Image (cartoon, rainbow, N blue to C red; front, side):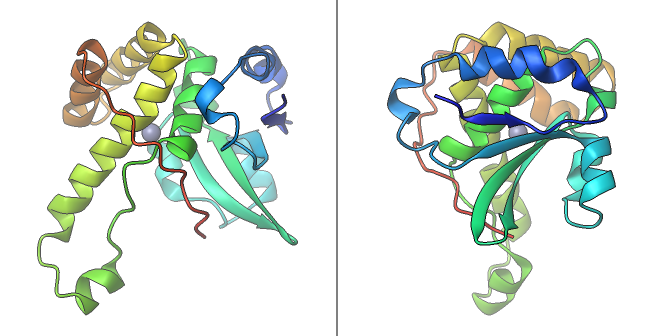
Length: 189
Ligand SMILES: [Zn+2]
């Protein structure tokens, strides 16, 4: 079953990784990955979707977001190829797929924090984000890519990205803890 669509233009080296994943069986998740997932590079996103992608991608190897294309909702996985040097691209993509099918929760918006008088939204969002990362990593782990993800995280640490979160993720991957949330990420724009 084809989940991933290779829409990269600027870098054509991703094709084998995308094929590798499309050839995998996702047992429990087969029914939930029913939306199309498009893979692009950051350069592609910049060239084709100016101002329509999240700036967080500048500091992370990959990012997933929803996109409305005409009448259709799709997921877009953006790969920041500059930060993926020496990384396992399949593991980067599987982690991003994990964000789609195994989400812990949605972060609190500023509007929600104001309306509902939530004073600790920063701390709560940090925890939600970390749990979402654990869930995404756990999906890749179930696919047999735990060691690949750990290597990618160590690679990011060497580039001095976000020590605390990355170290927590390595510990979670090395533990026997189960992070099966099984929530499908809702489309948000
Ligand atoms: Zn992530």
